[in-house]
Image (cartoon, rainbow, N blue to C red; front, side):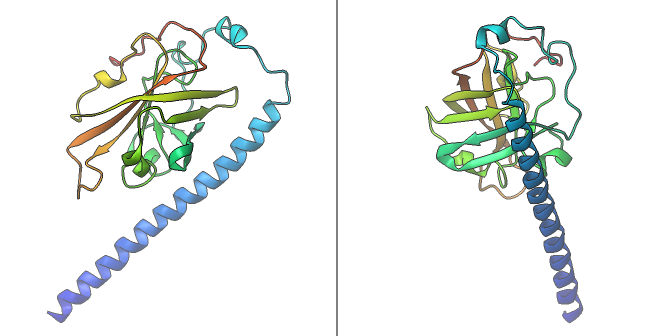
Length: 213
């Protein structure tokens, strides 16, 4: 019995050490990328800002051309002021990326492209606060070029295989995805979806991205 107790204690210590390492790594990544993002954003803003008309008439975006940022790179800064949520968004939505921050779902639009911008995050870390989100909450998504402002229009609970929530719907939208229920122990069976419309995006035709998204 004593041996078994010692085994459980060692396993518990290893698990605690592992999660502490992940927590520290994520905090370090977020701090470094936030500092870099803010510095580069300030530098970029020293140039004359382009008008929305100029942006809407510019060349097709990298998303439309099928080119995405490299996996694991920082693509934007997400903020939901009322919830006190602020985090760097990472390109990619696999476990490796989601340990670092909310992930941009490959196959969905990038901010300003006119389609459906899909972001995923863990319900027990970066997207924990989504349990408190409400209709009309403001969501800000900042890139080096512009800050895009979205307003929450709906939330819903869907099955894990429901990819229709990521389809373009005729104008730029932001879709946040996390697991549900928030207090579920183990792999959660459903997905919590937040849908927000863009308030200051250029009027563009939604991009039909690959993979049915």
